[in-house]
Image (cartoon, rainbow, N blue to C red; front, side):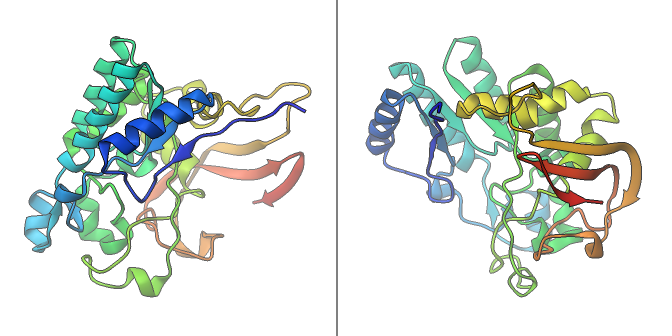
Length: 282
């Protein structure tokens, strides 16, 4: 049986010690693997939502975009200097996209991902969904959103992931500064991409398959992401033209913490098949 390799991550607990992260990157690369890194410089990351006009309007402390960008730059430097593969998790800012794009042009072994909420929403959604639009990194500005989409189109961003983070209603009902970060994302990932990207002509369905399935599997070096005889039958059958308003009572998850509630979406999953077995049917 072929041994599958995966990665190592500091997600949620960023490693601020540069020597430690350098040593770790070197060691995991020796294993044929990589570090998937949550880029957050804690000294400039204090706050509830993105630092900017919405934070000022709501009178809450904002998270500076530099919190992500400073650490992403550090990891790119270490990767380039030592010829290592590094993977940057859930990027959200224009500067992060530009840095990674430039690094790839220089041949740096850097891959990265983003999430549906960073190309679907901006910080303005916090005024509508409150803590259900609070995540880490936070929703950013329109310019950041536009660059994320550009990065998906030109190949700078390798993958779309959900960063699925369930929380109870009681936790999310707290004020912004006290509520936990994170939203659920599995059930809206496909429809969000169809609505915001494919239906607007920004990406094709083949692009979407590459970003959500094929490329993540290749980055992780696991035997997934392809429909081919002899492969594991992990499949999704969906109606690309189904339009609907996403409602709380449609959510299968026990947690309902998502800003997609009340949003008009296009594309609905009909069947989910895992290892050849139907595990969800609409």
